[in-house]
Image 1 (cartoon, one colour):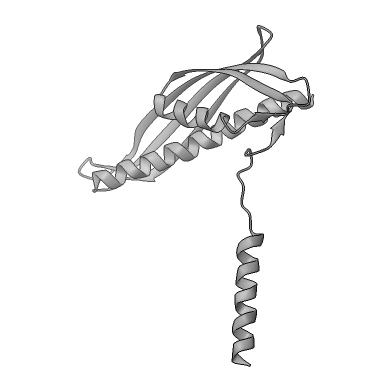
Image 2 (cartoon, helix red, strand yellow):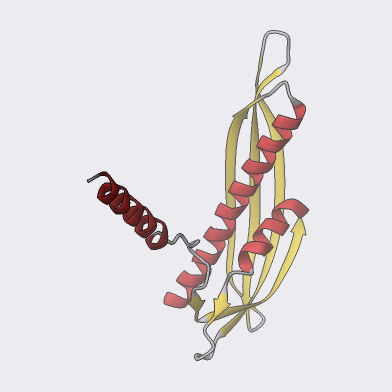
Amino acid sequence: MNKIFKKIVILFFIFGLTSCSYKPIFLEKNYDFEIKEVILSGNKDINRIIKNKFNFVKSNEDNKNKNYIIQINTKKNKETISKDSKGDPLKFEIIILVEYKVISDGKIILNNKIEKNNIYNNDSDQFKLEQTEEIILENLSESISGIIISSIINLNDN
C-alpha cells in the first residue's frame, strides 16, 4: 500500500511540473504590426528595460504589416516624501514619466504620456536600498512598456 501511494504521489508531481507552463504575456505572440525603429532619449536604465521588452514583439510573417517608429523620452525623479524628527529621510518616491509617439508613414498617429510611481521605505543599508530602487525601476519600466505595446495593439484594432 505504501509503495503504491509513493508511485501515485510521484506521478502527480511529474504531471504537475510538466503541465504548468508560464509564459510572459507578450512572448511568442505574433502581431499584425512591426516596430521598425525605437528612438530613445532620457534615462538610459529605463530605456534599456523598455527596449528589451520590445524585442519580444514579433510580427506575423503572413500579413502585410503596419510599420511603426516609436519615439520615447523617459525621466526619473526620486523625491523624499517624509523625514524623521532628525531630518533623515524615512520614505522615498520614484516617479517615472514617459512621453512617447507612434509614427507611421511619417505621421504621428499616437502621442501619449505615462506616469508611474512607487513609494518605499528608506533602509540604513545603502546596498539594500539601491537594490530596492533597481527592482522598483525595473517593475515600473516593464509596466510602462506593456502599456505602450497595448496602445499599439489598440491602434490596430480600430
